[in-house]
Length: 178
Image 1 (tube, rainbow, N blue to C red):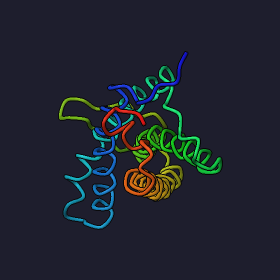
Image 2: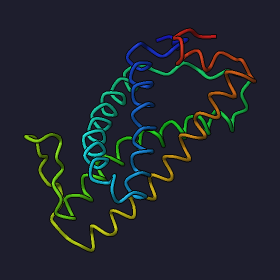
Image 3: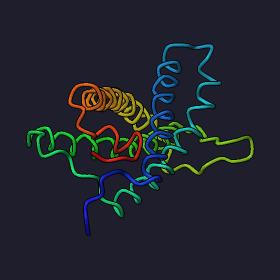
């Protein structure tokens, strides 16, 4: 099997859709913890968006495991190649764990995960106030980690696009390789 020169259309579409969703989710999350008056309607957005991210992350991971990523330029130092791979897997881990952790947090708090007026997801953990407090704190800390990882990812992408001009950005942005 030859190494592709670009990500496939499904990978690119999911990447950009999920990028917009995740950035939105980070801002919604900040709004939820900083505004008492906006919290209810932001939470109503946060829950279904989180579950949608979970579903799309599963699809994205499945696509990624079936379709290899383009090779990084050989001119990139080994430590940068290792950091790039590690950060991508960290992003996958966070895209999968954050929604599950949010769902678990709400379950432990005894709150329904309401997707719409007629769709409520079942709890995945028993109600437990102590567990709720720990999960809520973990969800918050992982959100900070996600924010930092997204910032590093965007910074690296822009470095490749504007400074290195090595084609890495184009493998996801336009579907063309180097």
